[in-house]
Amino acid sequence: MDDLAGFLRTRRARVDPATAGIPTDNRRRVEGLRREEVAHLSGVSVDYYVRLEQGRATQPSEQVLDVLARVLGLDETERGHLHRLARQRRRRAGTPGGRVRPELLRVLGLVTGAPAMIMNHRLDVLAGNRLAELLLGRALPGLNTARHLFLEETEHGLYADWENCTLDVVGHLRLAAGKYPDDARLASLVGELSMGSERFRRLWARADVRARVNGRKAYQHPLVGLLELHGENFALPDASGLELLVLSAAPGDPAEDGLRLLAALDAEKDAARPAVNARAGE
Image: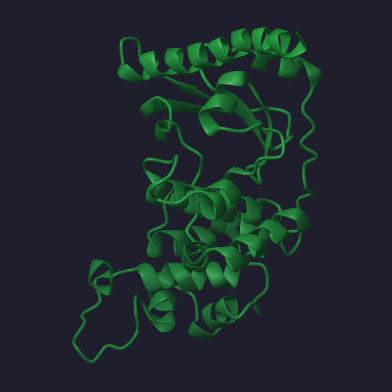
């Protein structure tokens, strides 16, 4: 699903030769660096680097990978991904089970003033509090946020920063594919998204990787309008592949009022339901 050879090719094509100190002219037909240029800058033979990009080379050393990362201008996330892909040939990581412990569900229930949910590495939402369900407009167990983003929503839908969200989601799934190359369910999800979304196909082909980061998450909710929230991702320290996402509003921010209004509308609907049922039974 993800391999060292393909990652090297896409990273090489991304490098501006001028930044690597290589003179260019209008006769240059290769996008990025040539294979022989990467080999020269890395201090390895051209034949060995070609075999790396063709998937025929033996396990590269940590030193070679570090030099390649420097030459290709990889950031910390990409560097870790490169090393992980290189290790796949000798050690395959098992797919985490991702079971949500009852104690974790109890902690989730304590979060009442902010949307919160528990997700696995495939971006399946395994559990969420009521405010998260109100934010996303549906029951959460069974929701996959990547599928929701690419196949159910559009750039004019719930996600106010839809384009950047798609970059984050594809980058995360690429990273997960490198960690769990034998995950058949992840491969199936990637295939489904590739078949159903032209944007996903284009972004997946770029082979960009992104770590899940804390920061702004903006939603255009149909009932309460724009909600600019801060997302905090908490990776669980039990090798389960799960993380807890909490979306909070700053005190005094309009989004804080929006979340309160969303909860109040839900409370009003619940309060009205028994009265309607009573009248219906008269």
